[in-house]
Length: 270
Image 1: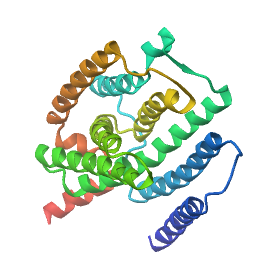
Image 2: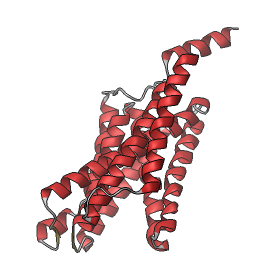
Image 3: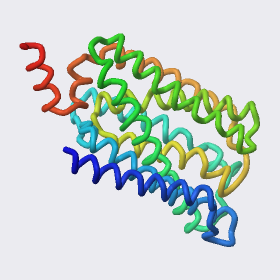
C-alpha cells in the first residue's frame, strides 16, 4: 500500500506541477491568438485531468463503468438534450449566426471542450462528489445534500472569472447555470456510474455554447431559442429533481468498491 501511495502521489504531483508551470509561464503555441488559447487550455486541462483521474483511481471510486438500465439511459439522454440545445441551432439554420473559422479551428475547439470536461468532471464528480458521498450516503437526504454541495462548489469556482476580466453580470450568470449543470451531471454519475458519459455531456455543452461566440458571430438568442431553452430547461430540471429524490442508498453504493462494502459489513458484525 505504501508503494502504491508513493507511485500515485509522485505521478499526481508531476501532472499537477506540469499544469501549474504551463499556466504560469503561458508558452506560445501559435501566433494566432485564438489558436494559441485553444491549444494552451487543451494542454493544461489534459494534464490536470490525468492528475485527478489518478486520484479517482487511487481511492478506488467505481466511476469507470456504465449502468445500462432504462432509467440511467433516460437520465443520460435528458442531460445530452440540454447540452445539444446549447448550440444556437435556429440561428445557424436561419443564417443569423455563422461559424467563419476553418475546420482546424473547430476541431481545436472540440478538443479544448473535451479536455475541459475531462479535467472538471474528474475534479468535481470523480473526486469531490464521490469523496463527499463516501461518508454521506446513508440516506436520501444525505445524497441530496452531497449533490447540492458539489453543484454549488462547481458554480462558485466560476466566480474566479471575475479576476480574469469577465463582467459581473456574465460571471454571475455563468455561476448560476454551472451550478445547475453540475447538479445534472452529478445525477448522471449517480444513475449511470460513468464518468466518461459526464465528460462527453460536459464537452458537448461547452462546444455547442462556445462555437459561435469563439469562431463566428451573429445573433445567438432569438424568441424561439429562448422559449425552447426555457421549456427544455424546466422540464429537465423537474425530471432531474424527481430522479434525485428517487435515488436509493444502494445506487450510491455502486460508486464505491466491493472491498469497502465488505469491510463495512465486517465492522458492523464486530
